[in-house]
Structure formats: structure tokens, C-alpha cells
Image 1: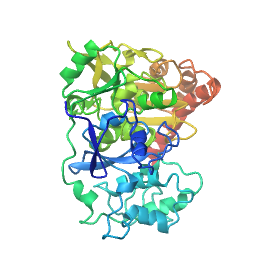
Image 2 (image 1 turned 90 degrees about the horizontal axis):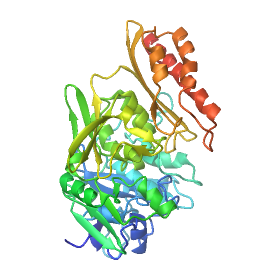
Image 3 (image 1 turned 135 degrees about the horizontal axis):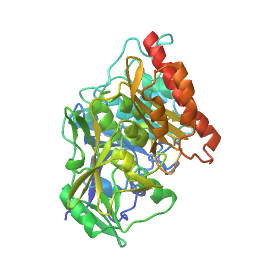
Length: 489
């Protein structure tokens, strides 16, 4: 086994002697790259963001921004990253490096005061700067009719949804984002997009009685999980990284599945769409390109771009959390999960997958290989997320709707709920109350109280049980109001 190494700003560095649980953030800071900061240690502030070379959607390589505080450095064995220090271009001998265009705009437009958050903003902005399909829009960014979230240069402000600043204020940062141009042909990081990213490498990195393992194939991984049922399985580490940082959890064996080719396929057939469990949410969003409207509504509200660049559907479902954002949408889509172990595969409807708080039918040694969404899709859909901070926050309540309305009658209703029970659930009583009835104000007003009674909501620091119940009823009224507005317009 070749010694684990990582390429940082163009130079190879050994991962040893770092422990297998060491994050990319700590690895970098131990080597003097202190532009990468720790703010929250749980993926909410973006002060730690760095760029990683990943398989591209429109070019061989995409520069993807991730939270370095969550990713184990062993997970990047053989991979290539760029930090804020690596963005500047070397000058002539004896002269300082030339600022990167993003750094230049942040400087001249006053996008930094104390500077603590600035390197993270710069890396997230650089990822958007290098996004291959970013293009200028003549009517964007104006005061009158602009999309406030997109600049005239095509810059999507959602790229910064995971970055926080407490002193500068966001207006000058937005100004800097909307002022950056396009990469030049001489830009080395732009040129790098034309070449394939580093291929995944098999990894077995052991230190201090713990080991981080990445196998080449799904079959090898499943055999390992049979031998090590105690292993922690990770993809983007957006959940496990928090456990390591905040709760000081350690694992004797961590198995990475994020680069397994068998878990990274997206297939569209005549009767279903199969989404690989290890595709990141960003990859799914860009590959589907709106083909599943309910998921298109979900993705912008699922945490931040930094998180979506690492998080996966397999991970979100695998944790079994009752407040994950994807389960309600997938329940409304009548999705199923494909579970695989060393003996074969089985398909389980998502409605039968969850068995209790963070519990499921998944057996020891089993992985979620894929999520299947049946076709055709229901045409009336919506995803409502109720949270104090709609982006990059945990939902108090999440409601997903998928309705078939034909001739003014609700022929089929599927409603997924999160945050109102020990597991994500279907609103079965509400579905039954809607089906066969006119899609009308009278029906909605009669059925909204039924939806308010679904689940067993509890009171906690995010919301009271009464508030959660009230939001359920309001969500149905909101759905009807929006569908009638769409018809009338």
C-alpha cells in the first residue's frame, strides 16, 4: 500500500503522522496554512472552506468548495486541494504574488474588516468563479428587475450561503462577488479544469489503534463491512465530522464509500430514476437539471452549497435522522432504497425503511446503494421548510407535497413530513382525506386540520409542538394558494 499523500497548492505532502480522524482543517493548520480557520467546527460558518478537484459536470474537473473542518484528511488520500494561500499567482523573483481576481475584488470593495472569515469567503467565491456554466446575464443584478441572488456576471450568491461574516456586512461582499469577471486562458486553475481530477485510490491508513479504509469496489467494501460490523461508513462526513469535532467521537474503523463507482451512477429509465447513494447533492442537482421538480425545490433549502458539495442522499437516509430534509421529499416521491450487502441486494419502500428514532431496516453490513424514484412524477409539488434560518439550518418542520390533480379532482396525494415524529413519516390520514375530493378552497380548509394532527410533534429549542402542528396546516393552505396563483397567472 502506497503511503497516504495529498497535493496541497501543487505540492505533495504526506498525511502521516496525523491520526485517521484528523480533519483537513487541522492538517493544514499544522503545516502553517493558517488561512483555513476554525469557526464553528460543524460546517455552518465556512471559515474553513477549501477547494477540491472533483469530477466535473461540464468539464473534466470542477473546483468544489468544501468544509475542511468536517472532512478527514485521510479521505483526501491521493486528491488535490487548493487553499486561500494557493489562489494567488507567483510573481517575478523578488516580487510578491499577484492577488487572485476574487481576492482583488474583496480587497478593493471593502469585503473584509477583521478578516477572519475572508479566506473562507474567497475559497467559496473562487469555486463559483470557476464554475464552467457560469455566464453573464444582461438583465441580472439591476435594481429594478434583477434576480437578487444572481449577479450580471452569473455569480450565484447561493455559493456563499454557508459562509458567515459578523463584522463586514454582506453588501460589499456581494459587490465583490458580482464584480468578478471570467477566468483568463492563462489562469492555471482554469486550465486545470481541462484535465481529469485525481482518480480515487485505495486507502488503508492506520494510526493509534484506528484505521481509515477506502476500497476500490463495492464488493470489496461489502466484504469488509461483513468482517467489521462496528465500522462507521462515511461519504461526505457532513454528519460524522460533527460527531468527531463536537462530541469527540472516535471509531476504530472508518470506511469511505464516497468514490465507489457503483454508488455514483445516475440512471434515467422509462419507469424510474435511480440516484447513486454517494453522488453529492450538488452533483444530483446539476445532473438532473430540474427533471425532478420536487428535488429542485429541496436542494436550495438543504443546508448550504458547502454542505451540498459533500452531503449525499445515502448519508442523509443512513443517519435515520427525523429532521433530515431529504426524507420528506423522497417519501412524497414514493421513493425506495436499494440496500446491498455481501449476499446481494433488496429494495425497500422508503415508507417502510424507518423503524424508530435513528433506526431503520438496514442490517449490519448493508449499505444504501441507490435511491429509486418511480415515474411518472406527480405534477403538483412543493417543499416547505420551516426554520429560523432557511438556508444552512435544521428544519423545525419540513413538508413535501406531490399531488396528481385531474379534472379538478385530487386523484393521488403523497405528503412527506419531517420534524413531527421520531422518524420521517407519510401524512397518511391527510392523503386519504384529499384523494377523490375537488382541489378547492373548501377541501383544503376542511383537510388542513387533519394535517395539523399528523405525527407526534414535541417542543424543543427550535419550536413548540403547537407551532409545529400549526405550520403543518398552514403548509397545505400555502400549497393551494400557490397552485391557484399559478393557474390564474
